[in-house]
Image (tube, rainbow, N blue to C red):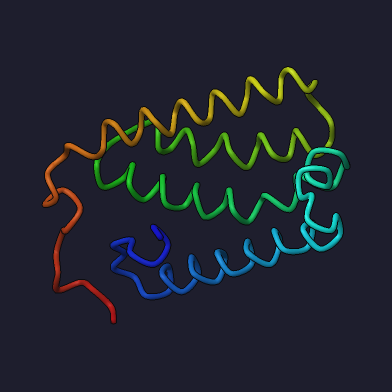
Length: 135
């Protein structure tokens, strides 16, 4: 939902983000079809599986970076970097299953911290100059 309701002034960025989201949906459908419904076996059971998550992590990274910029929350920038790098390391089997679980817990914890810090902030931090908005 964030992809469709994010407040971005530049129309090219909004179109890029929506396009990346559609690519991520297709990237998630492919392992679903390959594994006949057991998407986890493809994503975590093969070397190339985590690569199907890259477009989705790109969407989340873009959103967290944008929100980090508007609300001055450093963990948003950190998430934008960590998520895709983590998936690449996972895809080349650079970490053990235990390390993979720890990484997912770390990313989830940062997302919760980011959310808890962002939600109570005033809305006007995100609005900016309305005259710069591109339809």
